[in-house]
Image (cartoon, rainbow, N blue to C red; front, side):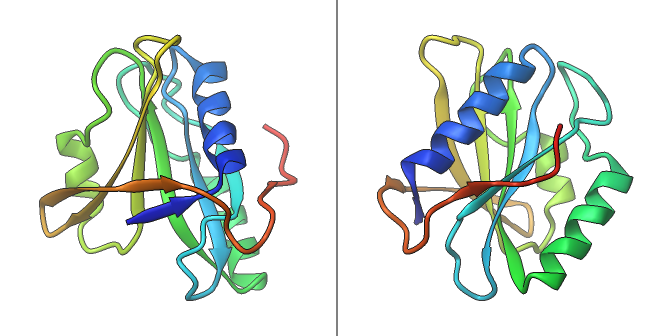
Length: 147
């Protein structure tokens, strides 16, 4: 189960709608070993595509170094899909072999009714999980890196 603050959900959806029709992608991090998604880090889709997403490698390296320095963990990897349901693609499944994060997918195919879902992906198996929107222990904040 993923428990996530409304402000974090709103930040992810805002990013997805702002980048539409290009797929948005990013991270939500929290204190190490906490599984608390607190800080949204929008990343650039290096593909600039409506069909594919990939983190910009230099931006990703900088962000992961900062995450390590702040003793945080990646809790959520998020991305948007603009023309299909919020469900992991074959590429999502292949690229997430063995990671222990929540995979949030937002569908903006109908911007008036955005679909927000979360999955665990392990060894090729996709399990949808319940998303509970409620308070987390600390206030979420946006990442200082400007997009």
